[in-house]
Amino acid sequence: MHLNMTISAALAACLILLVSCGGQGVEASPCVDMCETLIFDCRYAAFPDEESCLQGCGYNETEGGDIEGQLQCVEEASCDTFAIVECENLYGATSDD
Image (cartoon, rainbow, N blue to C red; front, top):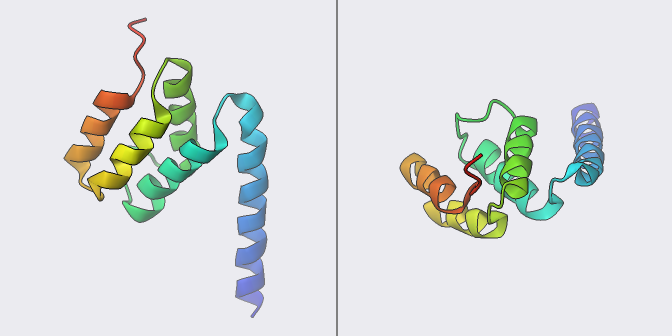
């Protein structure tokens, strides 16, 4: 019972942190959904944790990436690493700088 309360408290704290990241240029919904899929569902090794994924997503967004398109592509990739990389190539940052 105590473990469940601790997990619930930790999840609540994570949600508060994720919402507060919205002011830092990270679109909460598509970035959070994509990072949860990559980190927790796929265990995608390119990101050591959810924070680094959210930072990468925020960067892609500021550089003209289509985050919603990338999210849909990642979901359709079904945790296939090569397909996920192709999603990044198709929908990620578009700036040449």
